[in-house]
Every structure is written in structure tokens, then in C-alpha cells.
Amino acid sequence: MLCAARHAKEATVIISGEFVPGIGGGICQVSSTLYNAALLAGMEIIERSNHGRAVGYLPPGHDATIAFNYKDLKFKNNLSHHILIAAETVGNRLIIRVFGHNKTWEKIDIKTTDLEKIEPEIQIITKEDLPEGERKLIQAGSPGYRVTVLRIFYDGDEEIKREKLSSDFYKPTPTIYHAGKEEEKEDITVLDQVKEDDSL
Image (cartoon, rainbow, N blue to C red):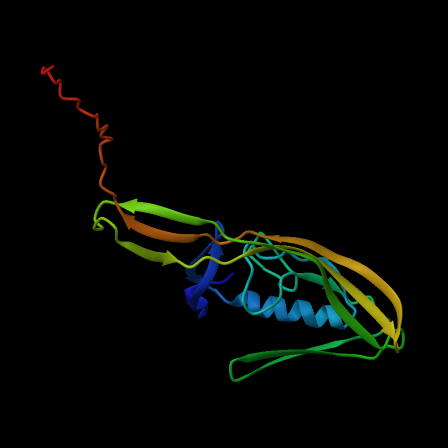
């Protein structure tokens, strides 16, 4: 379990679809990197979930979120030999390698298809404490996505197998402004006044 007592630090997490500070934020960068390493090593994916919002460090469909007692990343070594997983950090980079041997394929590609971009909506929230006409950006929006991800196995240049990994949806993050209340103006109807001319 992630907690401050176990030296977990605060960073950005996604709660109810919103980016907020939280203990253990950033752990999904580890699970996502491990997920991609497992994919490229040909592992069988047992359990994996995408984030509710798109992340900035991987393309849509390539991430793997985890949450204690809720979401997990699980994969199985379905090869005919043992594997070794090694991880290291170099500066601000995380590197995960999977060691083993295989003669069934030479290369694996992860391909994104049917990518649909969903533009964020703009929300304007009226605030009584702001002057009329003033507007403040509270949250910069980001697009959402629908995407299908495939894994393709090659023997040399020949495709020998392809499989669908996932169909993922990422909700767009709205752009939010706080704005001062606009003064309500009464509707005024101007009537043409016709002056009566009594002269003949």
C-alpha cells in the first residue's frame, strides 16, 4: 500500500477524472513502462487498464494505470523459458528491460489504429468576487481520445501474427475559466413619439 510512512511522495494523480495532488502519484509511469516492456517481450497480458484521461508521457493506448485494491497490471510469461526483468533509472528516465531468448519471432510492433481526437469543452464559471468583464484561466483543457491498439509479430519482414490489445477511451479535460458577473441590462423598447400637429 502506498503511504507517506513508506516514503511515498506526493505528485499528480487522477481522481474522479481530475488531475490533483496525491500520495504515490507517478507510480503509473512505472506500471506503464513495465507494460510496454512486457508487450515488446511477447508476454500475455492478463489485466491492464488505461487512465481516465490521456497522459503526457505515452501515446494513447500505451499506458497502464494501477490503483490499490482496484486496478492492477498483470501479465504472464507464456514463453518456453524463464525471463529476467531489470529496471533502472538514469537521471529522470526509467528503463525496464526483459531478458530471455525466443525463436518464434524477430520483432514486435505496437500499432495504434482508429485514433479519434475529442476536443475539450469550455466551461465558464461566474464568480461574484471578480470584477465585471474579468476572466481567469483556472484549468487548461486537453483533448480526449478513442483508440484501438494492436500487437503485430514479425519474422523478418513477414507478419506472422497480429492481435488486438485494447480499445481505450480517454475523457477530454475541459478548459475552465472563472469570470466576473456581467451586469444585467434591462431591455428598453424605444418608441417613436409622434408629435400631434394641430395646425391645418
